[in-house]
Amino acid sequence: MSTPEAANEANPLLLDQQGGRLYVTFNRPERRNALNDAMLLALENLITRLEDDHSVRVVIVRGAGGHFCAGGDIRERRAQTTDSRPGVDIAMERNIRAGRMFLRLANLPQTTVAVVEGFALGGGFGFACTFDITLTLHDAKMGLAETRIGVAPAQISPHVVRRVGLSNARYLGLTGRRINGAEAVRMGVAHEVAQTTEELDAKLASLLDDIDACGPMACAATKAIMNRVGEMPLEALIEYAGYRFGELNRGPEGVEGQQAFLEKRKAVWPSLG
Picture 1 (cartoon, one colour):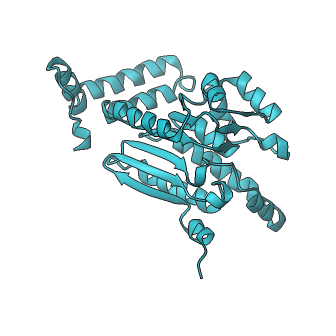
Picture 2 (cartoon, helix red, strand yellow):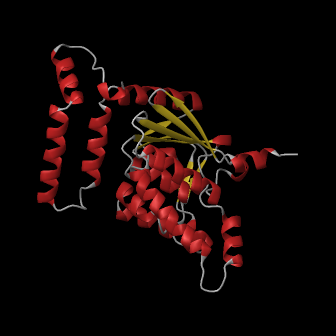
Picture 3 (cartoon, rainbow, N blue to C red):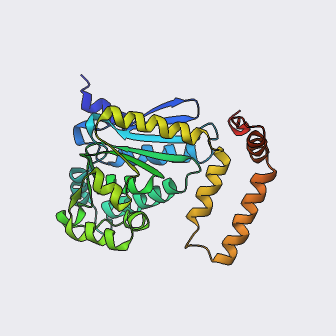
């Protein structure tokens, strides 16, 4: 007889697409949604789909059971370390896979939103720092817990540093301290904090309305330009940004958006048609 835990292991992500919005739920509540091999594979497959799926313009991710994501699944990692053959480090290889997944997640063309409740530790904190926008409950518990169990926040460090700066990243990583929702907003991890689940849901609804008011292709181009800041030489970035601007300005989305502004009406984005 199948148990609820076995059912969740078979479906580590729950997907619900409503128009241009894709709601994703981390679905390992019995493990506080810790990231294991099955969830990593499901995320890789989802990202592959989203990289070319123009029917989705915003991805909203939260966790089942009152927690966002408690980080990597330590039980599975220890088993992988014990079972590794000579010359093969399964845990290290999966760590590198996770790093590639986080990079692809950061570069998705869709706007990504994290809704944090409960624990967002280790890799879960990495998700909170990688998503474009993060909303949180005031009593969420976030942080880089890896050093307290003798390892490093290896693959998420670039995303944490980019989000909160090197000083704050070192503070969190070298102490293992946890921060709450208000502190997460102060550090720049999260953008809005709510006192109750009802308020959190209301903030999410308002945020999604604002995202819907923006052109999907314009948002994708904005992400692509901003993600290249600091990675592309400035002269090359000027050329790239100018190309993307021109492409949008003469394209159907730019034409509709500017015409709607002149006519004092809401734009109807053709890219969603």
